[in-house]
Image (cartoon, rainbow, N blue to C red):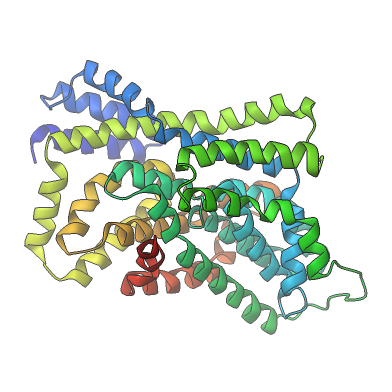
Length: 427
């Protein structure tokens, strides 16, 4: 690699280390690369940032965020929990397990890990604490479960991986996340069962709760959301971007006219909140796309792949190194920006050892999902601290069990490629 590329990485990582936001670190790193004689100019940077967002496909990201915000404000998470609790509440650790299932269901609506935790955690953590569950335990489990929203479709990181890599379809990536997402959910439920078996909580079963049929009827329109989105994509009725627009319209109809949990007066506030979530994400994606193109022009991905393969050609050793790298990155960087930056760089490495692009995408997203609850940047960790008032250092202890459960699933995802590729192969 050239000296200009070395300067790019030096500036980028040094700025990140001293706390400069990702956008500033990327922008200044690329500018430093251009000034040092790299392949990009200042005009190239501005032009490509605009081109990165001038895309029909990228519209899926802000539209899915808007749909999730509408559903979240409409109190959909409570209806999803009633259904989950009716299914699992009678078992040991049933309420925490139902919370995990609720996060899985809400993740199938919002596609965002942070939105999933904010919608479910703000309701369920206080409720479980009132029932006698340890506050640290339920907070750690719910924060970890929120990360399932990035695996279960419609997953924003899966969409971003498909857009960034370009060699796989969005539909294939969304389908690939179903089995891994369900396995992660089951692993967290098993952890809940084991913990509650060792730390039993006496639940008042005299309190009337909804039955399965009653809760299914009450939450039918909410539960139908992922069916509408994914059914339309997989049947070929509409593209992923069109599905995101359909999701917004469907969310409005359900929240305004069926459940009547949102009023027209609330819509401007919902739109503003969605815009506030979208703006930083999209501008980081634009900057990260420029970084990826700058590195591609200077043949950095190919050079990196050749360097790693010259050190070792052992597939499993390289996979171990990639997983460790992605776990560390997940601790330090927001998921979408990490995918936009690293996917083009690491994809040639994975291809060099025969890893299927879909399989690698799932491994990448699953690793980064763990970063939602790992310091120093774990967004769900700090959101949990703000909701519950528990110090972050205490939450770091509470997430050890859930993180171990997710890492066990990650091992199986790495070793068994069919867990990622079986469903996409049926399309």
